[in-house]
Amino acid sequence: MKIASHFEKIERFDVLRNRLDQFNDFEIWFWTTMNAGTNAVNAALHATGITEDGPWYPQQPGVYMVEGDDPGSFVAAFKPMGDVLHVGRPKIEKPIPEKVQRIAGLMDVIEEWRDPCVRDGEPVTQEIIDKVDTAYHEVIALAREVAAEGEEA
Amino acid sequence: MDSAEHKAFAERIMDTMEKLGPEDYEMTIEGAMLATTHWVNYALHEFGVTEGADDVQHTYFLSGNDLQKLGIVAEELLQALDEIEKIRPMYVRGDVTGGDKAADRARELLDRSKELALAAEPISVS
Image (cartoon, rainbow over all chains, first blue to last red; front, side, top):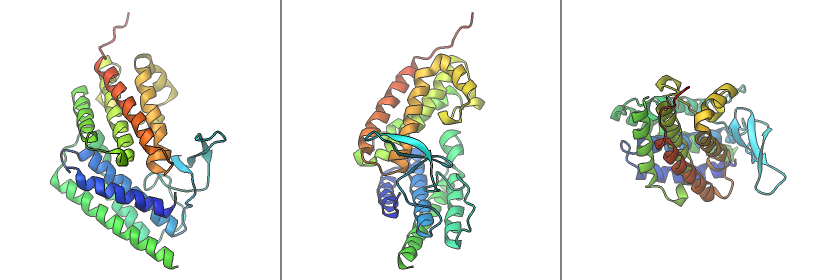
């Protein structure tokens, strides 16, 4: 997906996460945060030329949904690496620039709480929310920097 | 997670989904996926075919054996979750037009999943 589309999603996700209550709506607040972060990761990977920005959409590592022959249909296909599902899915074998590595590290901070708090019922604390929120803002700011640097290059 | 916890989580997520509008179609689809997953697990626990340690996450993580076994009692529920999962690449991760319609469909599947799950009762083997 194109960098502009990733940032369009990030802007809408940012509006939504600000509308939700961090505790009462934790699951969707967290999922919105994680999705925005993943879009930031993908924008940064495209901007640095590590992954492609074509119209193929990840279904599982290495497998993408692409338009089929029938209008509006999609079929699974192998394609060059495009958008990742999460940091590490799939693993990227190319050298990663320092700022993109920092983004990936911050996403690990966010994703650490995905299964425990959203699927497994671990109690949500203010400390967890603060860690996720701080990492999120850093991820988005860094991705914007990387994308701007990519435009200048 | 036990069935009561799955029900509570599913209902919390569905409450949050009431705050989402058409422009939030990605999170309607994701909320439907998360809540339907809880309804699937609630139903499987109520049927007595799985326990907390065997919670289903994504249908694509299930083996053929798992799908056959769980499908005996929860085929429509698993199909609903699978259909929601298949919407995600194009409309949540991608920017294919029609996300609002896809979200409406995900919401329908979630509502049907809740209905099916709440009707689940322990199975008898004879």
